[in-house]
Length: 464
Image 1 (cartoon, rainbow, N blue to C red):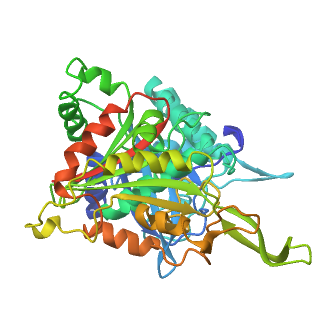
Image 2: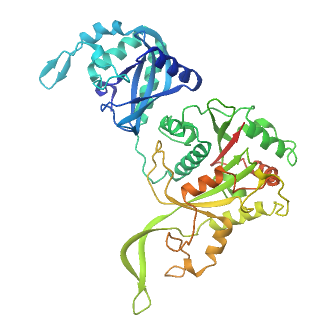
């Protein structure tokens, strides 16, 4: 969609209280959101918007995205990627707006009042600004300042990039990174929907999921997680510098809980060697319970089901298709590395702290995910099954998973038991699963030992 055929929006705050609240969010997080009931916007589509305050001046340009319905046909309208502009009264655009007719086939329509198009939280009659008039407004803004021109061009570039469509092929790593990020945000529980709604690709080549979220920045020496890893690593690699470690980190997102000092920090770090060392894609550390959870994501495939054998003892397909996971490829290597990490744990440590209690001593889990399209801003965890490492051992030794041709096949039917998204998230949130307190330092050391690869792993930590 070219700039010439695109028409954007102008949002104006309805009152002083709304202005104060939204500007506070913009100042702290460079994002804000409101509740709307207008039908001019499509769910999930990123739009370009000019942002006006109650004094009738356009002061910001931003991207915005409509989310799904919140309540009573209203929805959340998320604003993000704010650029501050030199304030310009809306009335200044009236002449530009009035002199630019709207062409519809052979007829010209003069929609002369710019205020007929402004959207706000109190009015449901607003509509998209026609492309010709929108382009005239953008051109007028660009004439005021070279900074305006650069800012608007940057936002328009991001808007266009957001129109990219992602198929399953070639995006498996991004799916895993997004799944891990969403799980960490859900566990933290602080407005994770709004965090995801800010996602837009930064370039034609999407390298990591985390870099598309508003608020992601390069990792720095003040990061608690990095310092923890580095201090642990000095015990076995005293010549390693902190700058060497920083080179292996691709981005850091910090989410702060409102009215609290609690924070969630998510880091996207090189995965090639960390996966070889730990066998996992997500490392989650819960500061409250001093517990690690480590997850390896595996994709299930939709295949024809078999339910009988013919006279020659060959499997016969029925008309059903089921999700299947075959533990092949690097599966055995991942399990081997997980067991090596577990061998470092002292399972005989007495539990004297109520926050140190766990249902078992394992911190390793597989998530078998149903195949799905990569939806960057979706707020739903992928459908699938969480399986603890020790139960996976039992499962693979069971005749339940013997396939019709002698291989091992895991399905919803033969798995017996598994953790759903809800149950697994609840257990993690309560600290009932994960590593013991005394195991954390060894995990830190093993993770750091491996962080000089070329792929990515998601590391998340809550702290206060």
